[in-house]
Length: 439
Image (cartoon, rainbow, N blue to C red; front, side, top):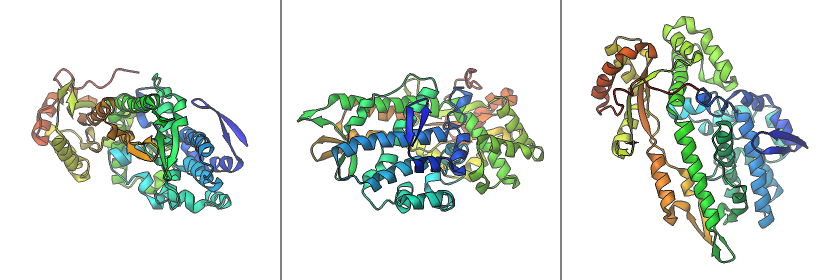
């Protein structure tokens, strides 16, 4: 047994097997992968890592299991061990800046959908040996691939709607970003099993628990606030896209391959890219701008809502996502065409179009209203849940930006974007080029 002091949760206790897994090279690599990518360029203290988050997810899993086993003694030691080890290993397949590369720019498939990548870590010593010793190797793999054969609550503890992963990263991301956002730990006491699924119980002694409902809504508020202020902060979005642009250029040069990322950390990836900067001026420009925090400037911007005024509708958003998110070549063709018409290098133009899937999945957490009656939280018709779900959906935005050395071209770029994309620029002319105040 070992105790580790964590900045968010305090003392975290680990058993010998968990310590051994933590001390493997694959898990130690996560010390060098920041949880929030380039968010530290906006919030300087937001440099916490996936290693810390993995520890926190394990700890929250243990705390939730303590509550569940006190209420339901049918939970076995093997089920607890499976959940704990899956929680510890749930981010092991992450690459540097993974959310940007996989979810936002779609260069690779998601880390949790790439079973070959997972096998690379789970099927090699020392992790394979340690999982064999645990007696639940196949069960852990089942949780991490969403193919668990056992009772579903084991997987839901780690990867459900409101789960240990979420409960750690909401608190950790807020704390390390300096935002006064948190939830009451008493919420943990409301977790129960219903028909072998993880639910939040909203009743007690025949009465409805309004306090528990309020705390669930508080979770949705925190999730929305973090998405608005951190995850989709415009400077974070642009800087992340610049990292992705550098990687795309290096991939095109043959300077790096996808498999190389599985062994790298944030800094070692950037160092690897810089080693090849002299081979491509565009790559050199992007990397030097990143190193000096000279972020590209916005020339064109579309969103669902702006200053309370309705923006794009769902159909238009979905059309844009089909053209420039799902179709990588469509996005690259637009970048090349804009660069050609502006007579600037293609590497100096970035089109950012995220997935249209901006749903607030936490709104669908299963809640038990009365014994045996389970509904998604969104079905209760609470106005705050509906409002937060809509506000979260409206955070989607589409951005085109240029290297800041081309600031004089922003008005021309705006007009070109309107013609090529097909919609009026929602940036006021005085806003063009504004990105973020200095941290």
